[in-house]
Length: 390
Image (tube, rainbow, N blue to C red):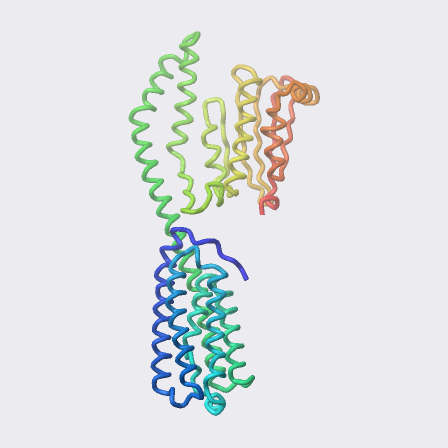
């Protein structure tokens, strides 16, 4: 049986009324069983025993309804005990009723009360749970009839199986719909907030950075360096505030969970000296993999700034090749001899390429290949097979 996760606050908004409905059904079913017994107790072989069983059913109705109102208690021990109670109540009919009434197909002592356990299993474990509980109660019903399967019992079994499957499936669909709605609302809220911040940034910070860049970028010394830095930050900030928002993770789900668009995580690397080329369609990756891949790209670009020489340009190319994602970082800088430089860096304790780039890709099941030629720049290929992320 597939075990569902503990309900998140979003899912609980759907689950609460469903569990309340099951509690009401359980109480009404017990009241109906009491009414039937009141009318027919004179026909039972042991009327007092029947009332004792019914009293126990009423007590369990109160207890289990209270327990199942607490989300963390909707677990195997409580629901398992609920199913045992349903089966026990059903089988008790053979102890308190007459053989003639049982053979004649009269109502069992709990009547429809055991169906509440089936509905509870369906809500907790979906249609598989509903069918499992319905099968257990159906077998108990056949045993109660002495191994026979009269027409009425067969009809009840079919209805019980249908109820377990349909209710379980409908509950799963309702949870999925509520989660989708919550994510859509979060994305909409994030978009509105981004637009608000974008307007504020555009009216203030971007204008100041643009002014500093235009005024100081061509000057020598620290003033010129400040102007160039202002131009870089202006370009990066414009790309950030104009890009699509990353959907927020739903409540109760870790920030590292879920798929994101790799293009979103590479936005911050855009600048005057860095060009990022991306596909027109989203490049979906698990959040953790996208973050690690973007960090490896950041480490490669940091090496360009440190070692490629003044004025070097970097180019980031993102390719979605279905079976793998390929990100290539190229620069037109000074280049180097990888066979010599990388072992020297490792021996000196500088682990930027080995740890920050190759190590990250290795942890994800991919690989990073560094190629460089003196005077012709450097190329870093980051390959991430999708099958390793499944």
